[in-house]
Amino acid sequence: MKQLFIFVLIGIFLGCGGGDSTPSPTPTPTPSPTTPSVKLTSLVTELSEPLDLEISDDNSGRMFVVEQSGRVKIISNGAVLPTPFLDISGIVSQDGGELGLLGIAFHPGFATHPIFYANYTQTVGGQLKSVIAEFQVSSGDPNVADSTPRVLLTVNQPFANHKAGQLAFGNDGLLYFGLGDGGDAGDPLNNAQNTTSFLGKILRIDVDSGSPYGIPTGNLFPGGVGGLPEIYAYGFRNPWRLSFDKPTGRLFVADVGQGSWEEIDFVDDPATKGGNFGWRVMEGSHCFNPSSGCDMTNKVLPIFEYDHSNGNIAVIGGYIYHGTAVAGLAGMYVFGDLSGKVWGLKQNTDGTWTQVNLLTGTFQLASFGQDASGELYIVDHSGSISKIVPQ
Image: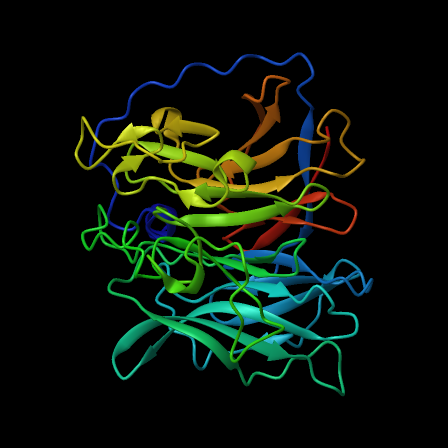
């Protein structure tokens, strides 16, 4: 049973694309004498296939857990409330693989404007779609949301994998979200490089203007010339978790590889803001299609990549740590791998990044969460949330 569960969960991130090429060795990370010593402490365990953990800015102390089946649960005072905050399980397509309710994001003015946004899959008339929708909190109960969506965007999906799913508001008040390349192996429809497709992209919209949304200035294709005006960056395979470093506004994206290379991308580098991040021409910093001699012109390379040696499976994006509980972790980008490894990336004075090993567990890492104090949490797809604390 455990082997079957792991196989299904691997499908969430890899789809049927693994093993298409032979991994090359990654240089051993430079040991850091200041590597923090951390462990996990359990927060809650009674969840069903959690994929995302978010907080709102209303100072309520509540944490919101996204369950893949289409429910959002509230953790309050260390316990899961019995009534779901949101239940759209009746409209969500979810097959135990990559489909379902994949992420939520609260409006940055949530305290006075109680709305939030969701990324989920739905089948309409036999056509699988990714849906970006707005939901409102009930006027009578702040712990219950209206389950009627106001749909902002639907995108037809050709296959059942590579849906990505994270949404996040930047310091600019705009909504960013990722969509995978549409699935199968090797992006057979070349969606990620097709700027007339929403697939394989990071998209940016203004939810506070326009109908159903506005197009902000600064996206890659103003007025839709050369590509869809919603596109902020493109060339992604399956961006499984993106996050903003709130103090700096930097956007980090973890993009799951095909079969050899997992990568971390810095999307808001001033020198290459937005841009083309390479897939399917490249996997990480390496040629993929073609396997050699590919055109790397104007492709943005990852700030870090790692191969599939040592049991690595698929990258899981995280956050820059801004808590105070773990000495030595401040300012590190904490991320991991589906296999249960958690690492930190520390930026050096020359702009390069050094990897440090933080912990290895038996959990099925699906996502990270960050609370209002900057402390970090592990979302275990098998049903629990744990906090990263000092050893």
